[in-house]
Image 1 (cartoon, rainbow, N blue to C red):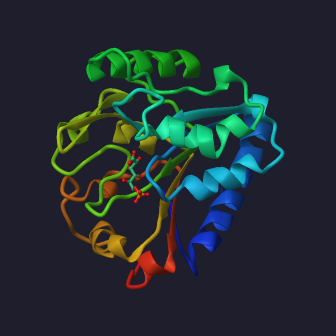
Image 2 (cartoon, rainbow, N blue to C red):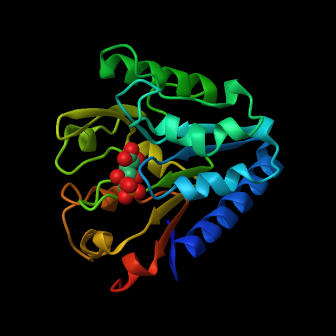
Image 3 (spheres, rainbow, N blue to C red):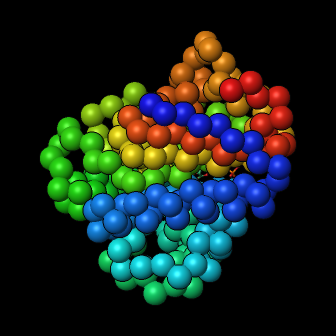
Length: 240
Ligand code: 6PG
């Protein structure tokens, strides 16, 4: 793992830096493999980044969009990460519908939808059960409780190591999420974290010793590159 921690002066600098980083990974991926695969995070922090990506002139037919996690709600529900991303970015650019790999949430059983999405990823990446494909970029956020994607402290999702996709649980609201082995198979993992409220969790995530199941972002140790992009409010006290 090659870990980089950057503390940017403010959110707009954070957005600009993450945009530059993603555009450079995109160019490399398309150059080397003819396509770019990225998994997105939900929540509030990445929205201005998605708006910035929408303003770029990019080879949209070579870009494939996935989500690292999704709330178990219909795609037109206000809590849907897909809906947030479509409004901020995807509906504004000519990206082919087949390149948008939305998480299914309509089977009224998250385990059924999780299994279906796993099958979809296996077919897209031409892998068999037990194999973990490498996305070019997995974009992550981190909650005040140090959860990431929908890998929440002391939940069953943290113990799933033999599948790509599993069911997450946040205070009994269900989610569908990448497992941490799938995240760790990525070529580049980029954490985007802003706000002073994230400091205590960051201190535990970066602590030499702490419990991984209490602070799930500690489980993110990718085979490739790991970038922590923080704004000053979040990163002020951090001793990387
Ligand atoms: C989600 C996310 C989640 C998010 C964190 C941080 O669906 O909610 O994927 O993991 O990244 O909760 O959220 P904020 O950016 O809103 O602080």
